[in-house]
Image 1 (cartoon, rainbow, N blue to C red):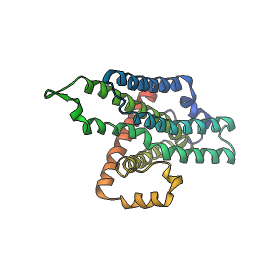
Image 2: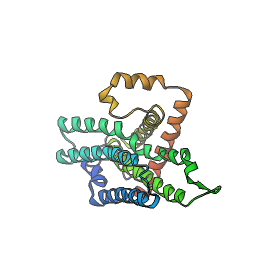
Image 3: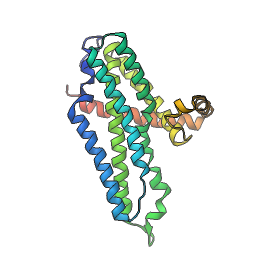
Image 4: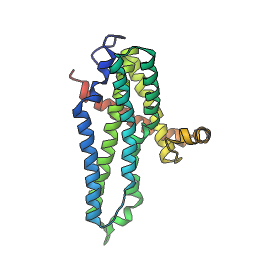
Amino acid sequence: MRSSKRGSENPSRAVSPLVRTNAALLLAATSAACVALLAFRRELAGEARYLFMLWNLFLAWLPYAAAVAAGLAVRASSGRGALSGAAVLGLGALWLLFLPNCMYLVTDFIHLIAGRNRYVSDGAFGYLVWFDLVLFFLFAWAGILLGYLSTFRFHRLAALRFGTVAGWAFVAVVSGLNGYGVFLGRIVRLNSWDAWMRPAALIEDALHNLHVRGIAFSLLFGALTFATYATLYHLQEGKR
């Protein structure tokens, strides 16, 4: 990072990677490629399968949208004022709630494993499995990029306000919570909007599933979240 001093930069500068047109275009192009491949698969295989991934991709865009909105709020007020702080906290809560949907796209690979028999013909895998492997990877990559770019915004704000160490501690904590959110979504089958629709049941289910396997799953995907974020961060910021 360029600075570890608190308040050494204008907080509005922390949002720039999220509101640049090139970042938005990259995400839009990647998402469009996902949609195009899924549409082409329908023509190739003669069946409409894996359409649920479009919904999962949409949900992965929500934390990015919340991060961009938070960034615009900071830029509009130059980081000053209680209203700006309240907006950032509220949008930050929304971002954190929907953030697991980004890494959730990685777990969709389970559908390839669960449906592996449909790819076998005459005792060997057909070519469709390789197409679907690329399809699933592209959706997962879109989720990873959306998660990274949205987390970058809040990481920079935390680092600028509290210092470099605190910024990375923030990323580590968020990664752990994100891993647990993926566990609640994939294994327990909870949804982000359950926080509004049935908050009491959500808390009960979350606490009930604090067991060894759930913690191990959460740590695994939390570590994956942190590793992918740190890698992309240093690729982007390492030479600055």
